[in-house]
Image (cartoon, rainbow, N blue to C red; front, side, top):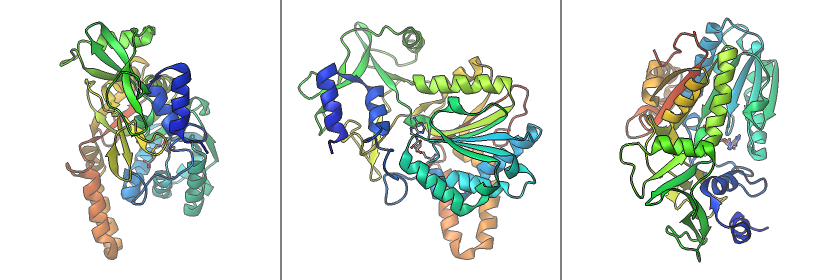
Amino acid sequence: MPTLAAHLKRRIADEGPLSVARFMEDALGHPRLGYYMGRDPFGRDGDFITAPEISQMFGELIGLWCVVEWQAMGEPTPVNLVELGPGRGTLMADALRAGRGTEDFLESISLSLVEISPALKGLQEEVLLAAGDVRRVQSLRWLSDFSEIPEGPLLLIANEFLDVLPVHQFQMTADGWRERLVGLEDGKGEGGAEDGFRFVLDDAPPTDDRVLSDLADLANLPGAGEGTVIEIRPRAQALITDLARRLAETSGAALFIDYGHTETACGDTLQAVKGHHFQNPLDHPGEADITAHVDFGAIGRAAADAGAQVLGPVSQASFLKNLEIDVRAEALAAASPAHSQNIADGLKRLTSDEAMGQLFKVMALISPGMAPPPGFE
Ligand code: SAH
């Protein structure tokens, strides 16, 4: 079977350099050879570990957050419960278990999992059925895009989802902004990777109107000068605009958790992780997770412009402490003393400054008129 690197090289030879966004999109989501399509990348033996895989407390607290918002919405039935990029299904299984205790909550749910990977869809189904609570929901479906979610009230969760959506990169030159592209070794450029890919700059200036208007805003950022790289993420902007319009029309609440920056800033944040180590993002496409930091400033502006109320971002530590993760940790440790070290380790990884506590941020988008949700008061 040809590798994704070989496929991308052929494409570049035929069509010329690809945008970073296109490279990222194929590296992660190429139907046969994309990173997520055929594997389970999570956990100690995989490439990286995410919050729900670190501790059950993460999904449980988010499940309780959903219950509170459902009650604030007047307990609609059915209510769309949506997760974007559910990974192994662990967060959802923990969230549904936490929702068990609230009368009619599980029975009101119309559950939609938005996932592109056939391998992970299979795993999500297995994990949810084994946990069992999913049997109580009204309906369950897998969709490939947010736009397919049925109409009606909405609760949405996305942990480490926005960071996988493709970014375009632009670099300031003496002649203005130029898009950063991925070309081949024999082309001019810097940052050569083992497979022979390297970054090059587009000869011509960008022409897309939306890109031009974003770039005009970003040119005034502190520190922007010749050589500066900036990132824009049109797929995320479009998704947030769609979601915020829905929240303006129908009641709902959405929670985005990701690593990134609170305010829009300059800088190249493209990164690749394989086997828990960083590598050159252009090395071995399809075999490593490629992501870029989430610009919560841009997300918040897109959501507010489309009519949603924006809360945060707050740090993951502040959000989880506000939801009383310490109390939950104590209760779990009291119920199973043999696991108390594990529980304490999980709490520390999720909330400490040295681990995920500050790097990860949480933003809520809710319908206008709703009170601030838990975690943001
Ligand atoms: N939320 C999970 C997984 C995060 S990894 C956790 O916290 O553990 C990103 C997830 O998004 C994976 O499930 C991946 O297959 C999925 N994904 C990646 N690109 C996607 C896209 N364009 N549409 C839907 N799902 C996508």
